[in-house]
Image (cartoon, rainbow, N blue to C red; front, side):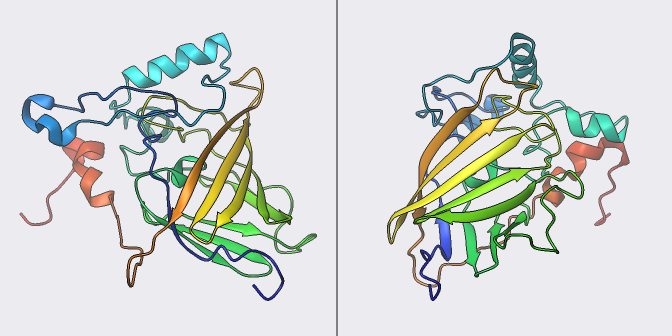
Length: 253
């Protein structure tokens, strides 16, 4: 880059199975194995949580287990219940951070001197990281809570450090029901270790859910295929019948 900072522009992807579970996990049958067979099965994998465990408060751990048991429950009796039941990924909601970074889809980093934009293939998710100090167009505190949070960044040497808050409480970390509240505070570190690899680290703090901050880390890989580009994964049409059941109307009939 002309300003002497590392060039993070490009398409990147994680090759971990943390979207299934951020902790160590075995392979397991997916929904309806009696008709899906191996097509719907979920892979096992190594966790990305440093130290191996997530420091839940006892009552929060009970909620996490309830989330896992009801991850496919969709309740649309009211707007509030629509958001706080079932896995948000199942319902094609924005994935939140850090989950968007380890979904099995690529994302693109677009870097300038005053902003870093991250564009995600899943459900057109987008985040803006404001890089200028005292930016009049980007107050320190979030104007309102949102699915992807409110982010400010700076470089420490070659490492992009991103500080984010202002999250809605409805995104999960994985399909295993790991979750946070609207008090989530996230500090991410993107450290290039070669032209083709970034080491990613996230420190997660939420005093409503966890007894202390904890970390996850994994590598991101630059996609190098010829003419590589993001393609749409617009999943809204896939979930309309699931979400709205008796209200759903097939436009083709």
